[in-house]
Length: 233
Image (cartoon, rainbow, N blue to C red; front, side):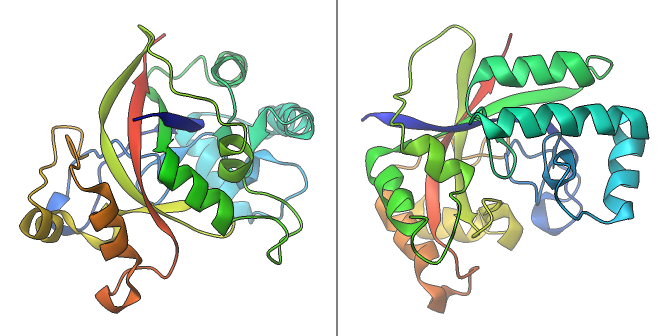
């Protein structure tokens, strides 16, 4: 089965503080769970509040001058399509440049990528067409539309499968937001591994349909199964 690149993410992993996985580190690219070092605060033209800047300055040991340099760099890369709204990198080289320029002093960062199978990729593209009431495309739509096939390299390693619910702004939830581990294990026989992701999901379509049924109580957004890979460079 072919998989297609959704995007690369630069993350600061943190333990979750709720549910049955309280205290555990989950290797999800969802910003509900972990902190992205590229986010709305990284753009000069957004309206993030002062607390957002204070939080990133404290957690990543930055200062207001560095924030200004980041925003200038991010604006220019976004304009040429090297970044996707809101927090994905369209290629690894851009992520590595960003990391080296602004976060080389941090050693505890994770680089991860998400991939969609062909069916899920086409569904997201269909769901997030810009003409459906939106003036601009989200990063996942932009990147999946390029149909960049997953390649086998010695720097990317599959660590599991996540199930994500994508919002209109491009941010996404994970099944962990609903503390669904036990429910999905019981209903579909899947098991999470040491990264907090599923080792495999034999019937991806069945699980996607389950989460996309609003009667089951999940966020009313499109849900997709994605392959998660860790990048080691």
